[in-house]
Amino acid sequence: MSTSTTGQALTLSDLIAPHLPYLRRYARALTGAPSSGDTYAASTLEAILTDPSCFDAEEVGGKVALFKVFHKLWGSSGQPVAEFDEGPRARALQHLASLTPNAREALLLNTVEAFSVSEVAEVMEIEADEAARLIQLARDEMQQAVTGKIMIIEDEAIIAMDLEGIASMMGHEVTGIARTRKAAVKLGMEEKPDLILADIQLADNSSGIDAVADLLEELGDVPVIFITAFPERLLTGERHEPAFMIAKPYVPDQVISAISQAMFFSSTDTLTS
Image (cartoon, rainbow, N blue to C red; front, top):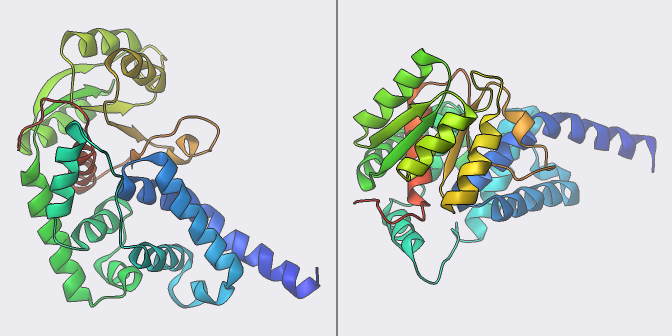
């Protein structure tokens, strides 16, 4: 390998690596599953390695450039979502299909990935006013589409109350708030939630990840949104990883967007529309 080629590879790695966990998070949220999301993320990297010129980081910055390549692949594949033959997920997919084209992508880019409206426009290769319109449209459509029961695992009282207020404002029922792993399992078994919002570090130094694992073993497929100050620790590729995740500190729009997305892919029977 020549010096110039080596230098180029190192440059690409330096520019891409810090943003890759967030691309995987975004891809998983779009597809509703870690495996399919990771496939799209891997395809994005392959496209860049095959043709580095498609990755214009010098022009728009590494994160925007990475997501822009992803979106070209996403658009060329028809923006698919996971398919299920039957069952409760079919209803969720019908809601997804009813959204205005490109609106969900614009909302996720803006609220979860924290791109500005102009950056969303750059990633999606549309005008800024169109990006703003899609973001607002998706927010309105998704917030009204599905409601259900939400369980909160959070040991910080102020954050727990804030999450409860956001969920209630969206029309969801909060089944309760748990501060420890043991309390979370007890609460979840008393009333099965449609969605779990979970912190990682809990009051008694127990793990929110372990609490969720215990619950899913008993309850089956319930969507989970992890809330953490260190999202990269959950996207290591070394364990079962979440499709939905919010970094602390968060803003309400991020929570609203993530809840709406997760509810779309819920497999429980108690959701209403």
